[in-house]
Structures are given as C-alpha cells and as structure tokens.
Image (tube, rainbow, N blue to C red; front, side):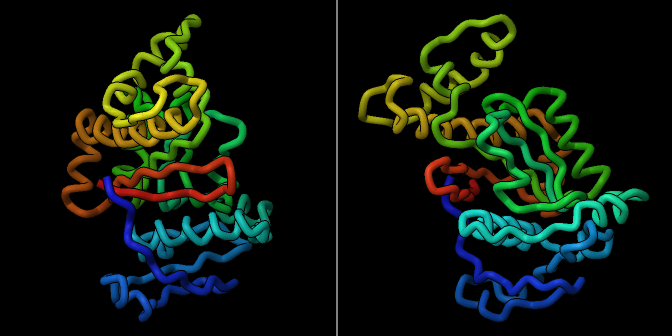
Length: 246
C-alpha cells in the first residue's frame, strides 16, 4: 500500500458551500470539489452527496491538522444534535481500535452526524463490523471506509506475545497473520514498539483485504467508484494520522 497523494487544504468557513480547489492541479486532482461543513449544524444530505471520496479524506486531514495544532472547531453539539434529529448523512464509516487514546472523532475533529464509528480491539473486521459498514455505505450513502490503526497498540502487542484471555484469545488470532506478513529485520518482540507499529500498519492492510474479500457489497461499491476504502495509522506521539491506499 502506498501513501495517498497530498491535497492542497481548502479554507474551511462557517458557511455551507461547495467550491473547487484550483491548487489541486499540482497533485493531479484538479477540479476536486471540497465541501465545507457548517460548525453549527450536522451534514445535510446535499452537502454529503456533493462530496467526493477524495474530499472526505481532505476533510479528515484538515481536522487532524487542527487537532495536532490544538485549535479544534468550536462545534455547537446541541445544534448538531437538533439538526440531525430527523436524519443523518455521515460522509464516512470509520473502523478503529477501542484504545482510549485513539478516539477517531476527536483525532479528526468531527462533529455529530459526520461519521459512523465502529471500534474493536485491533480494528479487525468481524461479520458484524462488515454488516455495519455495509449499512453505512450501501444504505446511508457514506463515501468512504476508513480503517484506522494506531501506534503502541495493546492488541497488536498481545497478538505478538501470544496472550490468552477468554474471548480475547480468539480476537488476537485474527491479528496474528499480520505478524507473519510484516517484513522487519529488527527484534520481533512485543517489547519492541517499532515492530509493534510495523505490525499495526500491516494489520490495517490485512483488514482492508478482508473487507474486500468478505464483503461483496463494499467491493462492488468500490469497483463502481462510489466509495473508497482507505487505511490509516494514528501516531500517539505527535498525533498525526497517516493515510494510505492500495
């Protein structure tokens, strides 16, 4: 999997509007429409439908930049709650880890009604997770599936160290193939967090492969270019989210 090409950031405003970013020509994405989202309201159907999958990535990149610079949007959550009461139009579904240090909504500075969120240790794709993502995209119109792993992941370390505990044992078995697939020349132990982080990235790639393999619904939507399936890795140190695609 390779990093996604850089996209020139748009200027986000308080207004509900869609505009073209001419500077995207340098990255080969000229003409991309980027929708700015009102701070005091949830996404409308029109706003969400006017977004491209690529503009969703840009929206998340800008949100993560604000998070890292400690200047989050001043969301009016009560207004967003009220405006989404009669319907929801999220732009993406996020599959991330349960780790308390990696809350996707905060890391990406999103508000109520912007994303569907599924959290499970090690961000693996179970049958129920796939069903939830199919609902988000095929029924509700989300434009992107984002799989988000993170550094220093306890589930990844547990899989490396062959931890056993009730139902957790079976969950960690789902991660173990990523250990074998990870090319790493250093010490391959759970105490080596460079190796843990390398496996975490491979595990994201493995999860994306499993989504395509086990969900014909999502694979068809991707083939039709109605959605994109994207991987990412959140760095606990520094707070940056790296996005990558196959």
